[in-house]
Length: 53
Image 1 (cartoon, rainbow, N blue to C red):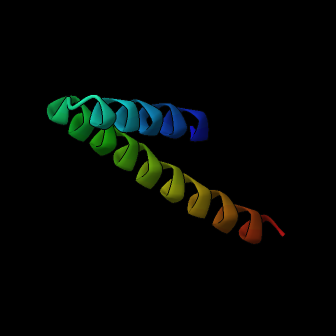
Image 2 (image 1 turned 30 degrees about the vertical axis):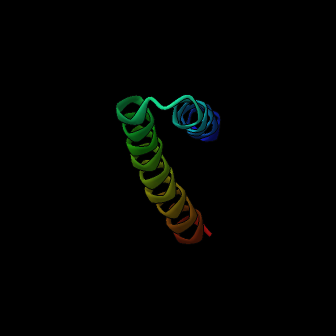
Image 3 (image 1 turned 45 degrees about the horizontal axis):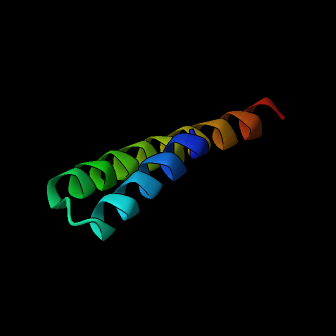
């Protein structure tokens, strides 16, 4: 998941440099969504590990 975040972030940066505002904004939004999903899954994983111990 982190790889996808980095890929979309790089796409957003490159698109912003070349002036494609819509593409940059869309890629940045997708990267943010994937990042939030990653954080939620990380928290769930940490909580489940604490419960199993």
